[in-house]
Image (cartoon, rainbow, N blue to C red; front, side, top):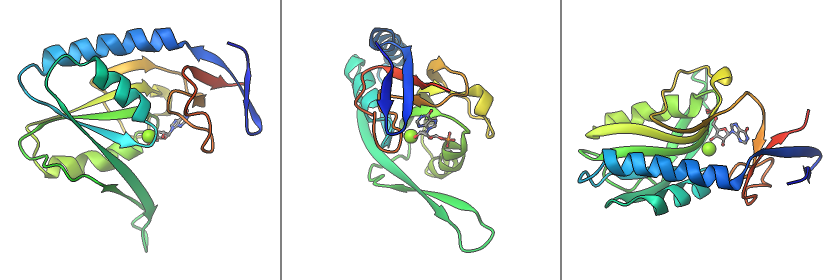
Length: 178
Ligand code: IMP
Ligand code: MG
């Protein structure tokens, strides 16, 4: 895997497609064991998580549902700061065993604001599956229950992650060359 160029930046190989596949298989086995008979509801957060969500979901050996939401953040009118709202959460969460699927947990802000909204709807349980987490970037402590890889605080690309819209279709994960 050589260096690749996207927009004005160059990226070097970081995690191979095979390594990602193997890790996802293990995560899916863990989830299939933990949620056997519970008919969990997976909620994947778009856009970034669509490839991870599809690959993870395919590997599950249990009955499970999946739905997709988009989180929109915008400035409040005064000092309220940024608000994150779920668009498209049309599935009843009350009493369900819910697993959030995220591509990457960076500062943790997205989940920190979204998790209370979900808790409010009283799921039977609420866990997080994320392909990647950058512990050094953490501002809001988010504990990921099913984590693919812990990664350094570098900009990553591929496997759903974009740089200004491009790179999501790259089947491996690349790291910005600094
Ligand atoms: P957080 O709210 O700071 O945790 O940010 C999470 C979101 O930022 C992820 O779902 C990604 O969409 C995006 N993000 C964070 N780090 C990266 C990266 O290295 N490459 C591409 N997108 C990223
Ligand atoms: Mg995302």
